[in-house]
Length: 311
Image (cartoon, rainbow, N blue to C red; front, side, top):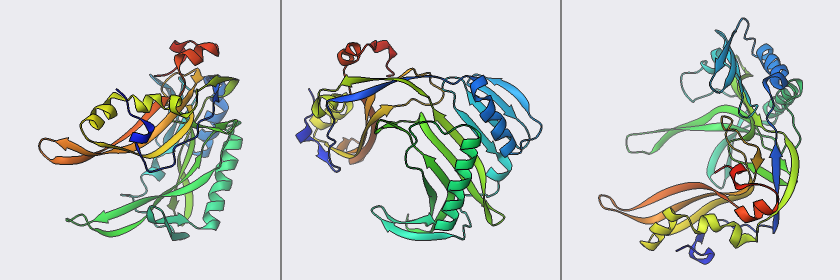
């Protein structure tokens, strides 16, 4: 049994998936190749005297002020200033250059143009100095974390801005990388009246070769969604399957997972409505899934063994 495209409550526009999508062969930067970035971040965070630690995930240089870490599975690097990270006791941040705007999700806080420009400039200079600006960089943005305080009844009584994060995504020939393994994040805190870098994380495996693979079109590419046993079972029991978000891209695995091939996938967010629960009655269940968007046969035809593809 399976779902049909017509049987799904699409609360976003269903994607038009092309007949062909790229498959990327990836490299993993070695510790020696990332050593310049490690040293640059060590200096930027003024870590001072550190000790080198061999960890299951890779290598770290740690001291009283913070640490910088290399991940062997992906070539990712992470660094933080623990003093800046501990500058505030909770999520509230005293930004002065901040605006409140309305969007589809309701009111939210954004940084003003002047402070945003400072963060973009600082982030760009650091990433260039660390040689962490690879090909395929997408549209960089800056967002503020949002916090809210609720009373005992759950009603909101206060809210405001949190830390600021510069975000950099990546893509290949117009197809975005999706998942946890292709992103750059730099988090800033308002310390002493100015934005100060608190932590950064960069993971993006370099692309060394690109092939095309047939998807068979939209419905075939969505086979994983339509045959998901969890969704099918609840749908057969009368639940409504609603899709609230969907993105097609190349799946990049987390920094701690080795990966040599990035294949087309579909990231789906949604909600199951009218799910029967013996104790609570009808409830809602939210779900988020990644589905492979090409068949094993298509991958073999492009020269890739199924064993190379992450599950």
